[in-house]
Image 1 (tube, one colour):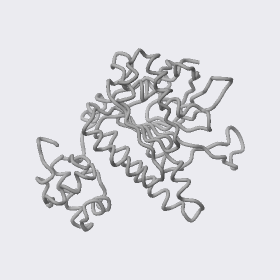
Image 2 (cartoon, rainbow, N blue to C red):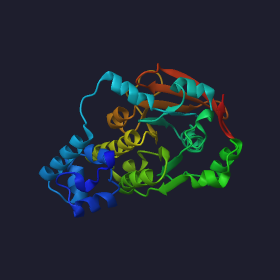
Image 3 (cartoon, rainbow, N blue to C red):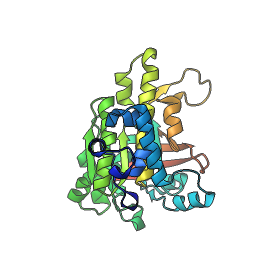
Length: 314
């Protein structure tokens, strides 16, 4: 908590409310200050008016508001990067996957989305001089694609202790979209108890597509997906960690020229992801990553390969 402020010190938060918030993984000022009144009302069993009052008080204690460009620049200096293990790929990203942001990998089956997720969950544990953060990872697995044996291969290739590497990855299998959102909420508590540098959601949209079928379900699906991504972004900012989400693609029949595939999730996913990369297959074990969107890096492509030892330059 900022300056040792406890939840009970926030005007309007009593012992019972504080307990409910802590049990839900919200025990720091930033997590309260960046919630919506609806979220707080649901978690703490408060009315919307009372919830907004509590959020306002938390923001006062944090002194959230406008800041100078210089102050924002200082904050950006704390941003770190995690290597992908491919120099080509890192160059396109400006040095690797960055903290304080959501990075989206989207592409068809077999385009190396999960391979990159595994590699990054190993690489985040490397020391900073080797392209890591020396920190742990959270892996939310929605399609039962997390393979410990693959982590073992990649860890051995990096000279890391296999058992320790596996122990530093907190894995959970999400069985539906509500469970997936709950796991993201629980990640807050894990981040407070461990030094987490990376959160992976592989894949972001699979469960939402299964749970919300048809045009009539599109609006509630997008609303919940937006809430889910806001939770992930809040974690990225409050803990200076990187968030990776993988995403599926679908055919876009309106596309007359070029690749007719587009990412699932529409504008909700696109607007919440600071960096977006389109992955596609090439010959044999070669893959191509195209940087589609970044706040400051130009569009570009990188060729890389998926080998037994992990990701390498193409």
